[in-house]
Length: 475
Image (cartoon, rainbow, N blue to C red; front, side, top):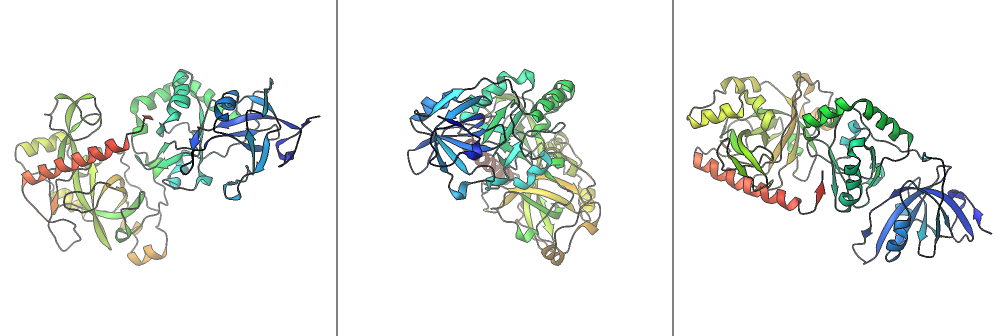
């Protein structure tokens, strides 16, 4: 006689048992890097809320995998039970059921429509602490926010599976719970799938139903978020914290991907153009004339060319200086000129009147979020891109080098918040001269040199961008 047991009652080497479970999660098929073994993992949960990992190998995947559908209930009998290797165990998962073509699996019709499972959700405002972290134990997220937007990129099989499911239900406001996502610093914070991620579309849990009901009642708000495209802009509410930790300029390294510093801006010593012609959509550089619609070689679409503000500046504190580029709206607000005005000055061979700007910046300190530029420029200097900056209200928020080394940064008061429309364009048309203040480049005054360096940078940037897009992606 088979014994109907709960998950926690089933142990290795047990015979003649059965258990009723719900498929909470079904992962993509993966393959080991060192062996040809293919596997597909599932997570089962019973009515008590206990969980166990299911796993299917090789040829059994095509036979058993299609039987088990997410959120459905099954009675599973006599699977092979073994403990999970201790280094892969979690508080919830310690045992593994090996499912083969011999395992008895029967769908169980049940009126109960709520999964007896609790998820530990991470709020959008807490995602920044997980940027580029490798440890998966902290990486469980729910897209569970009602007034903020974050971009999620899906890769490979997620596109044709969960991606298509989401697209098919988009008019009904699908709710998704995402687990084991990768957090990166695109526009501050963004999410993407990787091999062992899981995306649950409209899961039968109470929180998902509450969020769907909220979405149905707030269709105008959601439409406004989509129209504003806030998900492609830097959101300091998600990425910057009142007690944001910073490091000294002298401790900044190109290997770091998520860098915050407190520094002054200095670019009076840098001879540069302050703008470039760009594709309106992807912001990559182009030789097309202003307003001319052209086929962009980067985004592969036809869009008008338009001037975009961009310039290099030194970020300086009491320990050193590094060169960083600032783009778009953030650059315009620093210069107090639009890209079109800057272009007109350039074409008329009139120098921008920036004396007041330089004078004003001498006494200002900023909280700055930067990331390293991956492609090296022709002068072999490491450069960085300013993702976001905000002015510190007073100099009391800036620590001395000694204080910074011995204590965490004080809480800066933000005076202004600037949203970035920065797309990673790496252009360098700027050179500098050594002065008494920390600088990083040698001054050259040839416009031809500026154009040549900018072209080289744009070409390098496009190559890097294209290389990173070889895999299919759904955003």
